[in-house]
Image 1 (tube, rainbow over the protein chains, first blue to last red):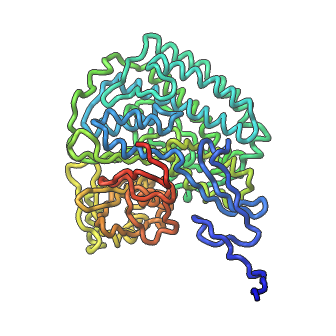
Image 2: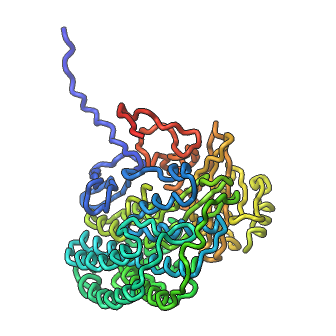
Image 3: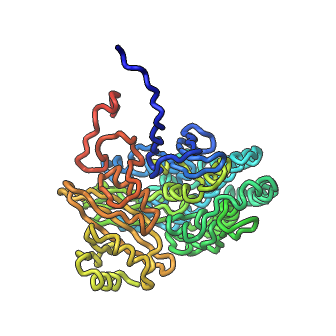
Length: 393
Length: 159
């Protein structure tokens, strides 16, 4: 005689989710957002633990673009060959990635570069910062539901990419700044073109403000959303527009100047909570818009002071750096980009570690999204402005 | 405050935790700390009014070769505007050290990365999982003796 079938009525053990740290409660549900989701700006997967429409917790999963470039660097023949790899971290602001690396490598190798190189680097880095912020602003508008500003931003970005293309032939990944110099000198009409861009772009910032920044719907979606208090931002080591959006007046170009940034006169915009609380999404967004104006100020001053010189005279032929290590940080559009370079006395680096601002800023996402609505997650993530190439490295 | 003074105060406060220091002739002066005392040293550096190291700029896992792994902490104080580097060394057979996640929240992901790529295990970390590599990956790629596996889940690794 066979055993009678008995229903197992004992409740199943609630599922545990790696990273949540506790079993799922009743009424809670897990939604996977990404990796192929337009508002995650690349391949980021967020596991949202939701109770109805309220987000209880966020568990980010990344690494889809991980290529362990730090390991590649250890196999390079010299410090110069690392530059194409750093280009591919934050691929919308490759100039700033190169800038940080070459400044760090030059300090480790003990190279002084000509003044002309420093000025061209600053101009390129600030143009690149404008490009990065334009993409951040445009795609943020698109996340929230405004399509037109994105097209306007892309239109203005083209002008900067044309300048880059005329200088080094590439539009996205430049390999332009080399340790000790530049791959090419700028073309003869560079100064006029850059000045013409500044004249052209300044009114467009006002247009952008009229169209998006002070738009009622946009403010409703972003003000008082994802508030990041100052002390939390510092404890999470947030940097760049995220930290400044929370009201901390901290910019490495002013507070810990590198290259020739101490020679220029510019302001550091910070979040003031004009439409809500200090440190909300609107503040972070607005810091970027105001920073673009300051970039134009720096560019105009640098172009006026641009000295003559040979941009390749300090490029070393063969280099054997002294044994040593240093950590050097620069202000990339996303925040504090740090390079930790260790040399064991051989021509190739012993260790290259990158402190990526996007990685660190993204780690604060769960802290500021708890209790938000699902639609707000899109707004919060967009306001952090991540590039997954840099998060995953 | 210059690193010399910081080291003197630290060595006087934690005689058993501070193992040494490299202060001269380097770009970044560093202080060597015992792996099981790093949390108390870190908390002291953050909370003491003379230091106020409120930011952990960077946390890097290291393979020093010769059977030693390690962690390097780059600290910075926004209030006081000074910097300090802390270093710890752990043997490769038993690479355990304490987690500073309770002091600086930013250490959470940095420590996961160091665990993922170097294989340092952080005791007291609330959620020590791999972060960049797949969760079922074998090995720690940034170790100097790392061999690329031939297969991953039955798929040939093309490299």
